[in-house]
Length: 286
Image (cartoon, rainbow, N blue to C red; front, side, top):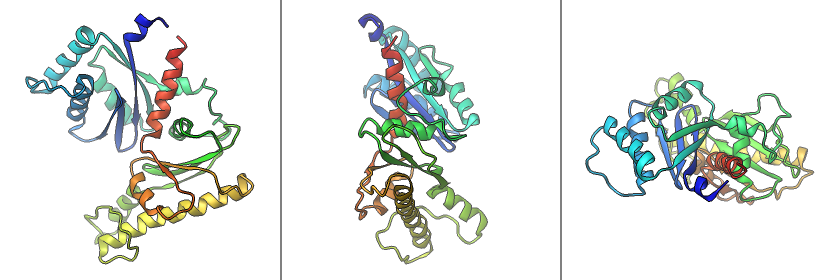
């Protein structure tokens, strides 16, 4: 790649989940809930990240922001922005594509197409192994060489071991914190309006405290138990394997693991970093 071409291209990442999307551009990360404010909040983030903190007071509505962003991309920045895109929900993917199609300088690339030919991680030994799980491992490879285990606390709780030969094992999949709360509140009429909050005291003082404690500390205990089972069965009892915790509920679960001798590493954006790593490798070779 020539320096001239390189200067006219930026790369970023977008991770589309079941309840929200996360975008990484210019070193800034934005998280967006799939609700009626989705388009507006993404527009604001794109404008602020591309302007790098400078304020444009004349922007009043979404159509004007579209004009400003397209003008910035084509006339001021003169850069194409390529976003590697991962998704686990096709309906939400369509919503994101409908927003980004307004910008000629922003290009979405399905990261699955690149992941299929990458050589960093072998993850096709198990049918249906999720791309988000693979990307989290690839993101963690930027901090440690395998073997290690990643724990993704999204809608699902996935525990993802990888061997020293960079082979992803099957791991486990369960329901994570917010999904557990949603189901509990849906099925139990009197357990409504609970906000998940970490409390060091495990035994609750009220219903909300009890539910939060049961979910958060229950998940933390499950992670420990599964970790030691996997270490025993797959890694010859090597209980010094590093653990990386990521995902939307990771900060809550991480706090409940604060006394664990394994000392897990918290990084909420491993999937985004995995996408970015693959995109960087792909376009550095052009």
